[in-house]
Length: 387
Image 1 (cartoon, rainbow, N blue to C red):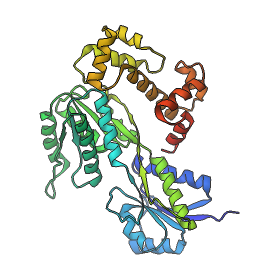
Image 2 (image 1 turned 60 degrees about the horizontal axis):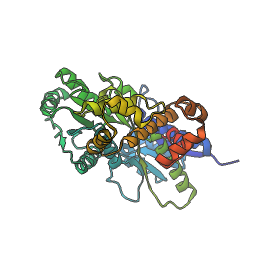
Image 3 (image 1 turned 180 degrees about the vertical axis):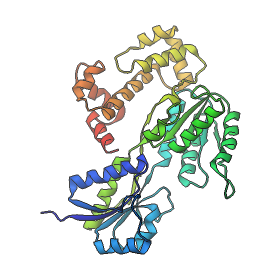
Image 4 (image 1 turned 30 degrees about the vertical axis):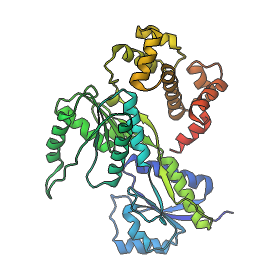
């Protein structure tokens, strides 16, 4: 019988990001276990002191640890194989760690706004947070390559004793002064919700004046905003799964070449806060809306031309000049987005998905999807179920 792993697990579960990582760790334990976890009492019970906690963990005789960065110093004294879940890159390269791919997150957010035709972009981050600065840099660089300038919010740094309500005025003034319409990336969903609330207080229309996009896809946070905010979803479950595998390899004494696990962005989950096409070309907007509203069925270039009311050549030229892609590329990408959502959000079989969106068979769907994404529908679905 396989020996049971005893793993100290010190990760909070208050946010969807952490819960996703925990789900991935648990999935790995179920498949490759048995594992048993040392976890601390729930917060409504009295908390023990540092020395008591350390004594309990040492007495438990664990094989390894997966801990949040805030607990790194505490568990260091246990001298056990450890993977740290961190929000910064300022850890030794020798430290096994799980962190976000902040560059890819910034790029995906910028690409989303650029695909909507925005000529003005903005970024709202948090002071002193390295991950926020990294996302801002990647977002602005991606926009700059497309010839679009980004307005960066200089986070308010209140004096001791001053509250969020002071920043409300400061941030509100910045939002009011931005060119409109504008696509705004917030560093995470909490910040996105704050921006949405301030826009509402200032009578700044969302999404008509400001389109807002957060990060983490925490539905509880996103849906509390009015309107609900769109968000970049991260492969947190997959990252948690890989972090558990990394720890397992270290405990087993196997060679580990890569000590950094990255939580990468999967896709933008669109909600009402980005439901806008920021293009001053009514014919092109008609074409884009038709394509996106009909992504669940087979449409041809001719169908779009008829809706747009332009000749084929003129419409093709406007797609290239305004969006940097062809009309057919837009149809295909919209269809890929539809298939991706169905693979990620439903348990429908491949045949059922193919039938629902007009394919003769799941073989046709798989061939189209693989050619455009580089992976099979089944592989994509497995990826989403881990992240």
